[in-house]
Length: 331
Ligand code: A2P
Image 1 (cartoon, rainbow, N blue to C red):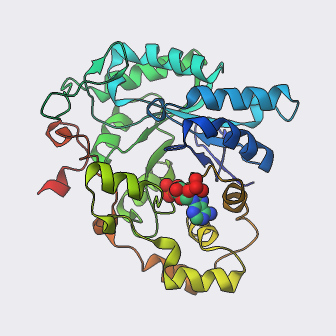
Image 2: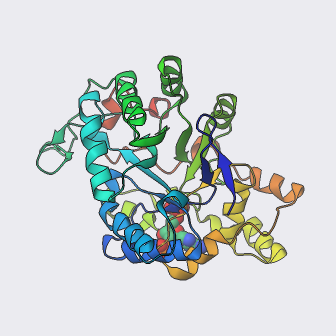
Image 3: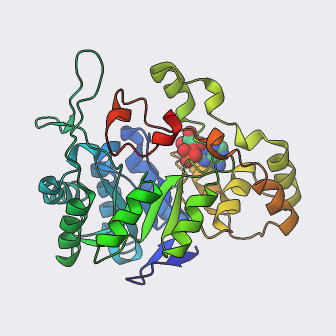
């Protein structure tokens, strides 16, 4: 396992983590336990994934079975869109710690920059009869961040970061924060390499975590069926001839090539899998180096904005929120 040091706390973040979005709740506990046994030490979850409790159970069992200790792990979770207001921060942090069965979170991210109104019973967004989500327009990132800093000072959170924020939104936090964002988690893969944002993050010592590093092949069916996404939105990165060629050349699998391509550029990856063989595959990526020419071939795959898969428009009406981060896409 390799690590990246976070600039302010010097905590070490493993460069491969286990993604758990869309990890089926009935098998995630087993998958996380298996992942820990295979050597994963970084787990990425979120309030919205609805699996914090199962993940907590797996971690607790792993510790109680004498396999390792909490201090070896790096656990990331996120403040949900329904809790994106200063007055809700403490409530969600406490609830998530309770669900995880942990006394602290290694990295806590604001999941998205916009806010939905919250059904207090289910802690889910309120959706109008026409299908539009009820927006809470009062979002104030700096006030939220101050509350997160309080949670950090109280020892509940070790590091703070952002997810799905654009450059302007990150800059606003940086200008007003005492404890700067340490990590930015965004969609990032061979078709969507995010060069502009990466340059900005490098300037501010912000580590990037790539979600959907394999192009999220598992989400395709769900998004096409439920949200009427065009199937072409989901790239088949693992079948690309360049990737297939390199897999043969380096004696690795296409997924290992895609993951190493990012890790080699000091980007953290969080591939999701609940399959034992693929879990193993996705962590065995440190024993090869992609050559300069091959790196250039992979860099050329970038489709810039055309390669983006996720724009959140499946949450109907979200584009009307003043903090919707991808307004440029709507022009
Ligand atoms: P599964 O959980 O059945 O392994 P991403 O992290 O880009 O969103 O991709 C996750 C999707 O890719 C999941 O559907 C996962 O399915 C699949 N996947 C994960 N690892 C691999 C791999 N090594 N090879 C092929 N598909 C993979």
